[in-house]
Image (cartoon, rainbow, N blue to C red; front, side):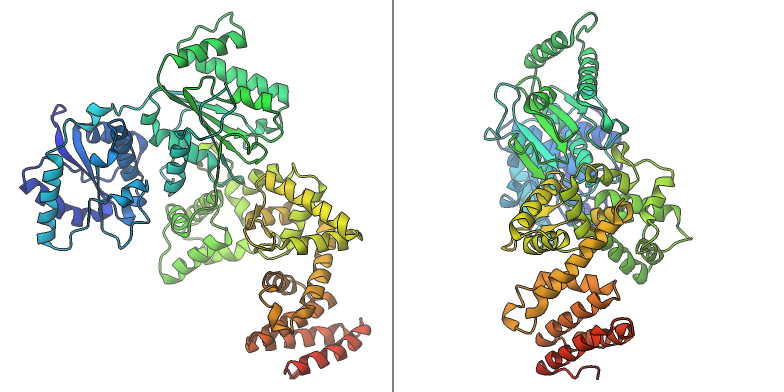
Length: 629
């Protein structure tokens, strides 16, 4: 192939859509346009960057067949991003990037600017295909020069930890464009005189913060011709997490020295201050650059944190961290779990489920894992290793075991996870959990015995007061402190509703259950939760408060599902009444039958339960249930 040849169109499309795209290619070719169209699927970073430089760079326009498959194709997204960023230099990237959308809506298309300026819907027949080709000819005739002539697409130099990304990276398109827009917005707050724009990606351990930062740096590197600089602060994800402040500062100095030396700055016989001043001056004499600081720990003061940021205003600083302590610095981007489609793509990239039964089990397994990126990657590795030995359904069954943590099996398997991440989910999360004070631990212990659902603040407060015999004011104070500790370390999230509820990811609750050194405290909190919920649900016979009781009933169901004592019987009765009043008669009958059998079993050991039974009979009759029928 002639390396000097230029093209009118770079046809960017996912390999899965090649049949539909081939018809468009032929129509464009028949109209006299020169079209770059590669028929291979490009899986890895090196191949992607080579094709971008060779194909996109020598084309006047990128025409993207933006299907749902396109949204999930790493290679396609790299091609589009490279063309979009290069064309921004010209002023209007929509002149160089044309979108064909074969889907009913445009929600899958990113950046959002492309949704409002769609070039055309996918052609439905040959006449429409020919019309599309004519429109493309008209558009291209007004475009001068190639994308590569606007801005070179060769990737800039990389300093520090070299990014390679992962061929299992999925989704996160809105997050990447959010990062890009925030880094380049003049409205992003800064620490005056220290950096340019600053963006923080924060979230719980293993959710994918570091990999997202790395993928962004690789994919959007053309926007940072001055280079990409990567520092590691070792806040949580490495054996160096236990280092003190002086040790971490020494580590920062070492990394900056290595970067300066790689940048061509003489470092021999120079002090750290001289090296950093020289580096800042050299960076200021060149183009904008990206400065990534991965895994910032909690507990840094402002002065210490500032030393980690970009040394010159030309630099854009991208931080990853689990803590929310620094929320006054720059723009915050909370990173949540994967979407269901992204989670499916990640889990099945290791091993495809065979048959409808396995597909159902795989989707249920994804829910069991709470759509958590690292957990899905680890589970995928375990399923890949056990192919032919263990099914998806069997893995789910083992995962539910109260005595064995199936996720930790993968820690013993061979293979590499992105970003040198540990395979142990517990090790990843426990480092954050261990930073909690007693009140934060108590909150997570409570969450670990309740349902995987938002926990109303009022329930937390009542339990905290009940478990230690506190008055209402002191109970509330402990709740505020406990929630603050958990939220600052991204171990809990505030739910936007009127209950002030907090949610805790299922893997965090799981880690607490398996690794809590004080299980007796968890039992005390569970007992207090039974008492609080029993009191709360004593209003269950009033349908006017059912919406108010919705979350309380969810947690009550979880508690009674794994207990068989008198507390469970009392709470079970009220959940049964709740179901009966709202018309769920089958559920109500099952609960009340189970409650009756439990009371009879406990009657000999708990004589006072017979009196309680008689009192409840009256309630059941009042709501129309024949008790024990």
